Image (cartoon, rainbow, N blue to C red; front, side, top):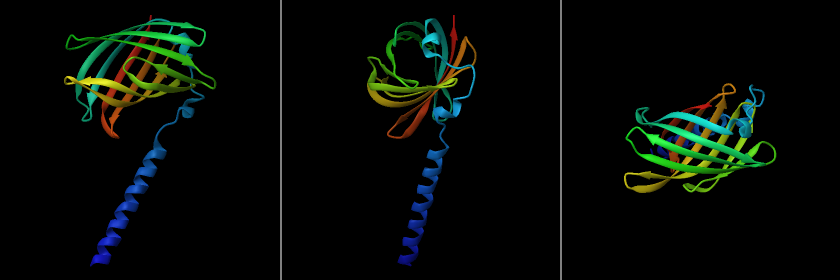
Length: 182
């Protein structure tokens, strides 16, 4: 009986490990989009004024908050500034100023006051993939939340953005945005 339990537990562990490994392999990679058109030029798209319309959905898919954002964008060489002004459906406002740097090989780095450390991004074809930790105000306190952020250029004016939020590896929800360049 004891041996049967050990074999059963070992089988469950092996199945769980295999599932995690297969799931990890299934995740998209930015290189998957290398041949997609139109090709995203981050410095060209985020230059001037960009409007955004978005929602935050919880882990069950329920829309928890809606928002708009106006982004004033400028670049000087490889350094860019994205000055974002958010207006949420509950009437609250928020400002975030991203300071971006274009690096070799389609890579980017970014910083903002509420970003913990440095955001890392990579662009290929029509896609940009960002990963970063955001210090997010929730119910009167601030928690660090990891973002897995994907942007896809649709045409010269429209870009779609989908970001998954996690804490301790647990999915909290998603942010979905549509950007329109003026």
